[in-house]
Image (cartoon, rainbow, N blue to C red; front, side):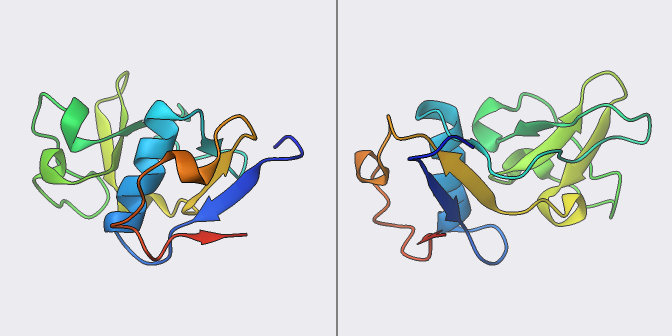
Length: 117
């Protein structure tokens, strides 16, 4: 990450803090704070998805959980039709927010558990 930005994290499983991180990535230029990310068995990088952007009914290929389209965050490989829930990806819940978008620009009133690193 560039200097001058902020790294934010969301402890625990899906909840309001994860929703805020998703909003930061979708609308405020935040990026994953750590390199890499989840991959499918063929090695493709999985794309982060959310219930707002899902028009299908994926099932987690890791734990077989159904209803991923109803979860705030899940991951998919379009080429392989491989889907993973948040728990099965083991992704660090951290984003880098560039200096051009201050955390105060986002309404995080529901996400009181988001912390700054």
